[in-house]
Image 1 (cartoon, rainbow, N blue to C red):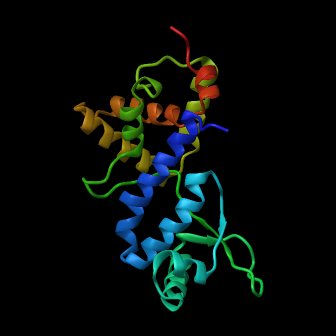
Image 2 (image 1 turned 180 degrees about the vertical axis):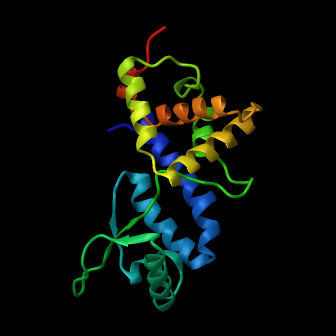
Length: 200
């Protein structure tokens, strides 16, 4: 089945998270190698998890199984990697990556995956800052905003300010609120966009 624009968007966003957000936190080439192998066998092929033994990872990376084992334990402890299936004798564990929905950058070199996606897809992913929502759409957006925790609100505000800065627009309260609405809409599926955005 061919990938949809939405599928490609999710892969791109998660890949930028892996390279720009997660990698600086790992602090280890071994951990990065493990994450890369799990990523290429899950996210890039549309799977949630993959079964890999330490021996498999050792052969794929050229790193000893002892070092792989130690690094994997750290990754699980950090919450980066999750064990999906219970351990069984002679059966490798099944792993998945914990990838957050909201990304908060702390270095100017980090890319905003949503902006990257918008730039490379051009007409497919346009700005939704000035669109008019249907009554149902506005109610949905308001509900999402109202249900945010304080931490989530601050993350959205930070992303909004970052995008406004890139666009050369002042970070006024009104602009930030519009940008947060745009960010929320960008996360909608194509079906929801069709349903909640008024046609001009």
